[in-house]
Structures are given as C-alpha cells and as structure tokens.
Length: 578
Image (cartoon, rainbow, N blue to C red; front, side):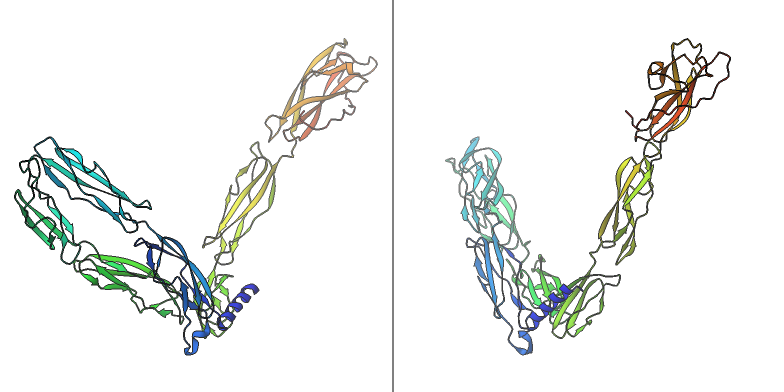
C-alpha cells in the first residue's frame, strides 16, 4: 500500500473513531407528477461512520429540508440535510410529467336515418393529472355530416408538457336500428363496471332517433361475468372482466449500514391495492427482515389478486460499511498485501485475493477491494535497421514478449507481424498485449530499411574496341554494360570520363550519350599506339555508386599487337543520379 493510501485510510479511521461521520443520502430521485402540485416523494437518510451509536447511546438523526413525504413541485428541487452530529449533505429531487391525458370517448354507436347522411354530435373529453381538463381535437369533429356507413372518428388531446393521447371510435349511420356489438369492459370496482352504450331505437317519425328501452339500461353497473342486454331491436352481451393487476407501493431504495461482516437484517414496507379486491398481500424476495449482505441486493416483489392478475416490481437494498473501504492494485497472482490499523479479521498485512473481501474489525466492518488495472509490460526492440534485399524492401524478423504481474507471460500480437516485408524508409510495427482482465499495453518498433550496396558492373564491351585507320577522324564508339543491382531495377549507367596513355585534348573525345562517345582516330607515330580509357559509373536510386573502365585502342599499325595501357587518373566526380 502506498504511503498516501495509508495516510488517507488512517485519517478516515480517525474520523470514524473520533465521533465524526457522514450522511448516507440518495444520489438523486426522479418522480412522476401525480397532480398539479407535483408529487409526494419519500426517502431514507442516515448517519454513517460515527462511534456515537456504540455503547447504547442514541443513534444520530438526520433532518432534511424539504422533508421526506413533502409535496415537490414539477422541476428540480435541492434537498439539504444535516445530521444531529453536524454532518451535512444534499441531493436533487426531480419531478417530471410524462403521463398523457386520459381520453373519455363514446363507445361505437349507431344513428338511424332515412336520409343519405345526417349531422351527428357527440361528446369527447380529456383529463390530465397535472393540467386538469384539456381540449380534445377530433376528426371529423362533433356536428359534422356523416354519410350512411361506418366512419372512424380519431381524437387527440395534449397536455401542457407535450404528452399526447390518441384514441378512436366508430359512428354507424344506418336506415335501420343497429344493435351495439357485444361489449367487454374492465372492472373499476368490486361491483363491476358502469357501461355506456347506444340504445336509440330509430326514427321517431320526425327524423329523430327515439330513446331506447334496453334492460339493463345504458349507464347501469354491470357485475362481473356476462350479462345479456335486451333492447327493442334485439340483444347483445356485456362482459365485465378483471385483467388489471394490483398496484404496488414499494420504496425507491433502502439504505442500511452493516453491523457485521455478514451485513445487516433490513426491514421494509411493501403494499399493494387492487381496484377490485382492495388491499392484497405482497410477497418479496428476499423478505423484509432478511439478512442483507454488504453491497446492493435487488428485492423483487409480486402481488396477485383473486383473479390471478399479478404485478411485479423491484427496488435495491444498499448495505454499506461504517469504516472506509480500501481499494488497492494487485501485485501478483495471489492479489496484494494490505495493511491497516485496528484488530480485524483477516488481519492487517494479510494477502488479499483479487476481488472483494469483507474485513470484520472491533470498530466495524469494511471492504478490501483488490483490482488489476495494470497492463502487461512489453519487451521489444526500439529500432531495427535492415539492408534491403529487393525492390520491395526486406523481410524483417523480430521478437516481442510481454509479462503481466497477475496472468505472467501473455501473448503479444504485432501488426505487421514478424517476418513481414517492410518497404524502404522508416515504418513501424505496433505490438499489443492484453491480460485476462482486459488491460492492454502497446509498444512500437521502429523499422528502417535502407540500401547501402552499390550496383556491380559485371562487364563492359566497347564497339569498336579498335579504331583503324588513324586518319584523325572522330569515330562513334558504343558501350554495352552488364550491371547487377538487387534493389533498383533501373540504375543510371553512363560514361563520365575519358583518358589516354598519350597526351590528348578536349577535341580528341566527346561524350555524346550515356553510353556513346566519339574518339579521334589518331596516335603518336613514334609510340606503340594510343589507348583510350573510358570510365563508366553505375548509380542506384539511393545514390550508391560503382565505377569500372574499358579501353579502345588506336594501334601503331594495322598488324601491331595490342599494348597495355596505364590509364591516367579519371576526373573526380561526386556520386549522384543527375
């Protein structure tokens, strides 16, 4: 453990043992508005990390403003809390409105007329939890002319926060009475449901629909099950069902402080109300009063009504420790040695494995969390310089290894891999090693492929290599040069100088092309013959240069034997392709 970590832990332990503490508050609460005033919001808050709760002394209390169970308006409200021992903290409560208005529309109904169309009025309303009564827009609107047949009316209502509800119903215009179709309605109370339907009986002789005389009447309370409605023009059924599950009331979350390494027994309240059955039992797993381990446990609760409609929801129980936790980096496969103050089990100086270990001390409990966030260390060359072997560059082999303080030797993947061909100049190979916990490291190998090998002039042939007669004329001589070059497929090959074993002037020779020259057919009449030495250079693309020579002879006479020339030094010339 680093000195800084030891100091921080000692400071926190001093705070815990000196009566100082901190507040355990929600990180923030989001709630749905239940009325124009906002929503009633509840939470729990406690003091943790204080020794004042030991020895039978009263536990510290927390006072918050606004208090839990207050009505919070729409928007964000800051809640400020103070512990009885002086600690402070705060969090935000945000109340939003995402619930659309509730539309109240007619059921499908019929209108009887002998005309091809009729003006029909209807009522459509909407109520919003926050905005109250809101306007409804229907197409076609009430009071429109409806033709014989079935017309679907689409209605929408939007509240002040942009939440929109849309629904439809049908208007059936017919020259004869039309019975309502069979109706299925959801129960709204233990008695069943109030059901409305169209019970008009047709033209009363003045072009108006007469009142109906159905039994049971329109707007009656229909019990559970199926009831036959008898009207003057026939019958239909109303079936009342209960498919709505109970409504659960659960805590948003429950926080508690562990009293031992095992955690703490936590109690909570969970209730449910059903539209038909009223209050119904709630079964939660784990149950209220169970032992909850340190950390976060999700509690799942289910309520079922008498008609087997179930609702399931959940909330977290967060159990924290009353001493500061320690998080440290693993130093080997076994984890890390961790030291701390106090009499504890496991004891200070123990080797803690990777993961979370609960430490039980005389002053309370805390967690030692050993993590591995250290990537492997890669061993690879920084720079490799390689001689080119072809025009493409050169194949380069290298070795890269990696060692991790926890998994040991780990694989290294390099791109391009060892043995790949690298082109001329500078390039890189990137090597990556990843341990079993996803920690990665990367190393870069610089690779430089160069060409320092000059072309090889294997042979030179001059045509002609003997000039006769020595009539003083300039004779064209052409060279054929065989050059071996591994890297550059087209090195520059050219004549760059001419000398002779006899004194000559610039007028005696002239380079006319890269491998062509004019030589004067002349020689000293008292000497053995003139020997011209032609100097040839080969230069590759990198500037590597090699030179060689070939001779052309002007003999003393036509039948004289060749003489050996001692060439004079050539003119100096710097290497280059220009």
